[in-house]
Length: 285
Image (tube, rainbow, N blue to C red; front, side, top):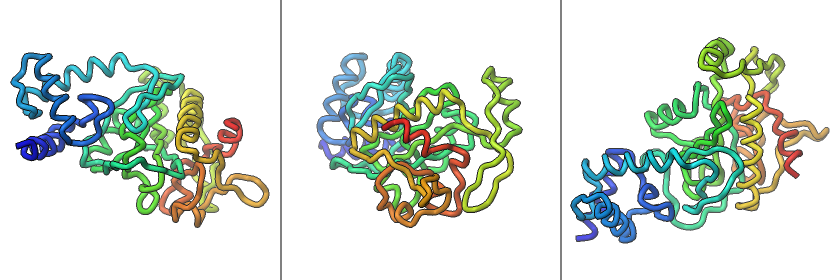
């Protein structure tokens, strides 16, 4: 009978958008352990102890999880375990149809840096969810790190073969300068405007840069991930030591060990143009 419950909960997770880690941070699959945690949860809230996350159980689970997340301030999840980080965080794991679970311990060798072309991390989450895509982390305008996928799982953020070998970090950044009006209207500072970004040998039109709060959170997040997964704190560089701002063959084949931007993978992408990745990473060593 347990096989039926496991199958039921898989379909329930896809339908409602919950994740096994909602029941316990160490649970990442739909095995017998999850069934026991569901029953414990149902008992706590006087629900029918059937091991199924049906509509009623889901509503209570969602409310309880929202209350728990409102208290989360300074940790991320890596392979289901809490890792402390010195900045505000918000954990909001995406539905299972947006990423691929990885049962063994994953060994990523790259961190791929993106921007989301959205006005907030919450908007980024909604857009990715609607498209069936994902990234592991998104750094919001105030520097809060939103976690969407455990790094031990494979997020769909950079295409094949990079997804399998990398961790995705997005900066929330609407990119177009017209959105500076939106940011100031919402109480944020004006974003820096970058006027001399060059990617793939092409100088870009003026576009929005990054808040200092985002850069500081990015440094802390990259440092923790590099140390946990033993990823070298290096970036693609030219022979003269400057940051390479074009496609790098080793990166596109997911054979580079270090931190990269999305534009290092394909000419179709320009994120994160203007991000001084070399200076940021050099300061981590």
